[in-house]
Length: 351
Image (cartoon, rainbow, N blue to C red; front, side, top):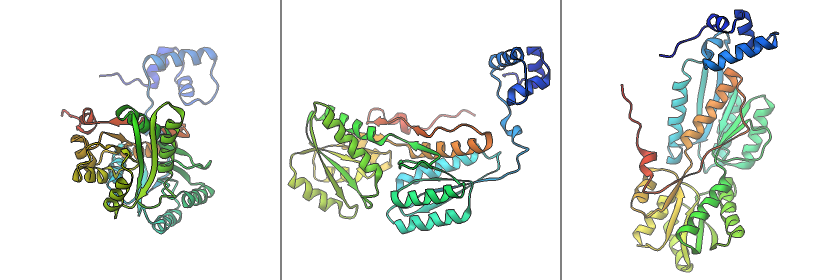
């Protein structure tokens, strides 16, 4: 087992007093240049890690964080966020951190405003939220920031200089990657870029993916073309069937959210084998159609990791004064039937 070094051990190794070691570790007080070099060298050699829990026992403040996200009972994409929150609670169980989750209807702006007002009334130290409605989110963010409440966002970004941290993917690049994939598997033809659901005007994530897709077509020598279309979830089969009958030159469909399985179901039902399908997220329904190659590729956004990292950033900022980047841009993972198991298999844990 790795030896646990005390301040006394380090002082003896560096040939200085315990007080000097303490001042170097905590970056306070004056030390000579030689002592600083000697102590730093020893700390690097032994890979010294201070006991952060013990360091913060003197701080009696209980930090509260509100998480404001779409209701995962209504949309399975957000269900993994529940797991992410629970994992953070377990990881930081030794600290005085309170995490409260508030759920809003992702298609109802009044639901979002109601839950946002509840957050304001709670006066937490920080808020981690998904800004589903851009205009309303900007208003809430400004109100929170004016009360000195730290605000972080994840999944989709919005321009606001009062945001502490954003965690998510570069959605313009995500759209470009989807276009590149279609370029590889189609070579030429028209691709329908679909948005399925309500709040089209507020869906910043859709507009950025759409922008990236079209940028790729404009900036490369590809023979692809694209058409942007929006459909409701309730009438998707009728609307999409009519659209495809009127646009027989459509050879690919790019679904910009997790509803890819709804299109895959229609492709399977009507035996539209020539249409290539790319979408997002490892929902069970999507995985089923990925396995049977109705869906060619899924781009994994990993909401669980996003919310875990967003909460961890806030906790480490409060507890350890850790510097937090303005943006945490996550990898854009491309998944097909061949590498799916790498993302879905559970880790083997040996007791």
